[in-house]
Length: 302
Image 1 (cartoon, rainbow, N blue to C red):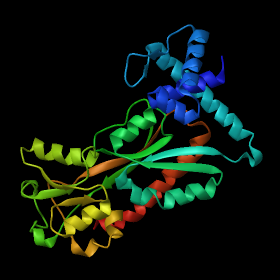
Image 2: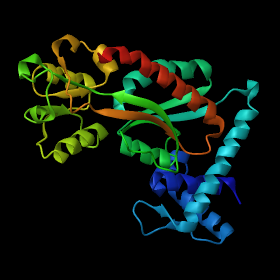
Image 3: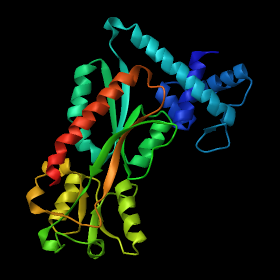
Image 4: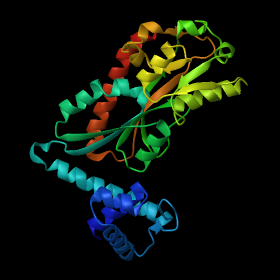
């Protein structure tokens, strides 16, 4: 069995196409196809369902992928183990959802750069469902995400619960939202929210619909700073992390709304696929630093 053939197969499974795999490992598309055919001939099985779009592994292909991924990870570990000085090298592909980015893009990343100077960090931002899919497909090495209370990560991932995180409801005084509003009162106002796909937005919509109350989104905006500026102008109720509010120039122009029957709480998680291999230490360092970074933001909850 040829390691290069295995690399091509793993790349196709993780990217979902010959074209994307070709770009990822810098090989022509015919070269990718030839290597996968070589691997299939070597194993005597069909690895890919070529009728599916995107390409998906067959049942035997999925098992071959799991074994192959462990083989390639072991080779990476071997290279790292014999590198000069024993430094951990290579890439660390980390996905972070926007609501954690205020905490995760400062102190934790500084800690990683300090402790693993030879490690190249590749940071991407995205919503929780997409990030979980990417780490499940090994397109990312680890992700920091938030899940609503009671929702657990997939069983095939190693999951570390970073702890419960409170989300603040904020509004401009001019909007007229009572500072101690009940859920029914909150339903009478429009909201400034992230785009569809945000787990928080889905969680809030579900909470209102479960109570048979309307949930109206007035404005969608991706940037946390832009959303808070729109909330400050009275365009709707917004949600924000304590850390983001503390550092925002709009902080003094909004009120924090305390709702006795609606206090959104989510759990932050760091997820990765087993085995972590050479990235076990960087992942542990990132998780510990993220916990510390989130703790420093909690004083702003009051």
